[in-house]
Amino acid sequence: MEAAGDEERPLLHHPPPHLHQDGDSRYTNDGTVDVNGQPAVKASTGNLRACFFILGVQFSECLAFFAISKNLVTYLTSVLHESNIDAARNVSTWFGTTFFTPLIGAFLADTYWGRYKTLVVFLSVYIVGMLVLTVSTTLPWMIQSSNHSEIHRITVYVGLYLTALGNGGIKPCTSTFGADQFDITDPTERVKKGSFFNWFYFLNTIGSLLSTTVIVWVQDNVGWGIGFAIPMILTSLSFTVFIASRRIYRYKSTGESPMTTASRVVVAAARNRRLELPEDCTTLHHSPSPPSEATFNVQHTTQFRFLDKAAIVSPSTQEKKGTATSPWRLCALSHVEEVKMLLRLCPAWASLVVFFMITAQMSSTVIEQVPLARRATGEDRGLTQPQRLGVGLALSTLAMAYLALLERNRLAVGEAVSIMWQAPAYAVMGVSEVFTVIGTLELFYDRAPDNMRSLCTAFAQLAIAAGSYLNSAALGVVASATMWIPEDLDDGHLDYFFWTIAALSALNLLQFVFYSMRYNNNVACRQRHPY
Image 1 (cartoon, helix red, strand yellow):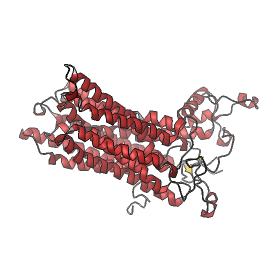
Image 2 (cartoon, helix red, strand yellow):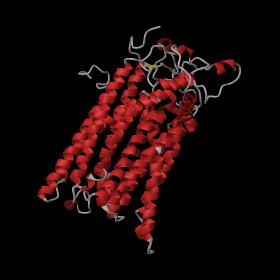
Image 3 (cartoon, helix red, strand yellow):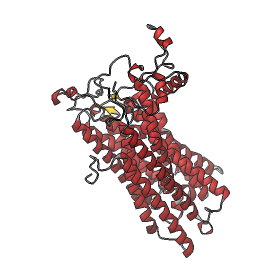
Image 4 (cartoon, helix red, strand yellow):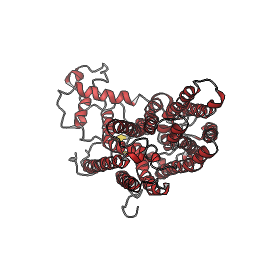
């Protein structure tokens, strides 16, 4: 048996080449099935032909989401007559809820419904929310009672939070359902999967661009009702086409709740904490049956070794041969390694929280600053996933520092600045998001256990939620403890707030660099024995 650290090995092992049946197999080898539950035929299901319709849903949902979020502060202040600070806090809270609900959708997708059904159900909720929001714009004219403003406000927030709930099934499932259309045991399709993630983010960017320009212009100059109705109709059309194309998709079966599996590992490790770990990991408890062709072997690692105690076969367990041992007392080593994989993603997740706190400024405080709204690295993808995240975090720090300088100069001049002075910040943040979001999508899909990919994608979305809630909390503290963001920004110091966020971002970048270096060192020490 080799010593630990003799060679670097990947955490996930792809099935051996013979499973491709010399490249002549008609069917996928990753366990996916067609709409009838039969093995998926490569020639007629999945691949880019299926992703076209999935990307259509993503594009229309992104257009609708940014049609709401990009101009929401303006809507709340000008139509509902909320104060600047209240509007900014309400936007951040709604934004955070939008990216918190994916935990619900991911749980349902991985455990009960599957990704397709989850998308269908939550897209329906999303469209209803858009419909309510569109109808709410007509209420001031339809309702003549004295309390029509309160009814209008309630209706607006019902529509907003229905879209937030709808996003709960869309955001964790569109990218993962799209990635499921590629057989990762096939080298050709595996490369195409990387292209899918690039197209996925490209369409996100186009949707954001169109919303920020065309839809926002329609809302400001034609009417809020038309501005909300256009993305609602497009989302409804893409939803219809998505359902009509169900026969060409590849589907993955659901399994036991990944949350239950992770909980069992933690509980079993705690209950076995007094037991001593064996030197030989082969004596730990393994899955009762060997992995099938549709699954992947997970290699044992030495990091977070205390969790290995969940797989210790104790003397009392050995004496009870023939009787089932409680899974809350003894877990398979493969389940232990899956929990370790989740823990390894936590430092990257923590770095994303601060990053998305910064991006939340682009839809809250920044709106209030002006009156108007491969070859070099040798990597197949040009940059590794940690490198992409690092570049994105660094650029976000620069963007906040620039905004702080811009606000300081604006206060010194004493006049409103042109929105064009904000263009560099938006450009830098746009590039920053390209690096960070694509890197995040790939990181939390590729390094996730196979049965937890929707959950891990939702976990990444949760970073956006946490960042938005953190931004909302920070705005609340600033409003109560300082006068940095008053109703009239000329009387405040928004630049101090931006400098604070820039400093926090710089510390976050240092934390991420430390994590990345430590993670790479741990990769070199991965242990030796696949099971």
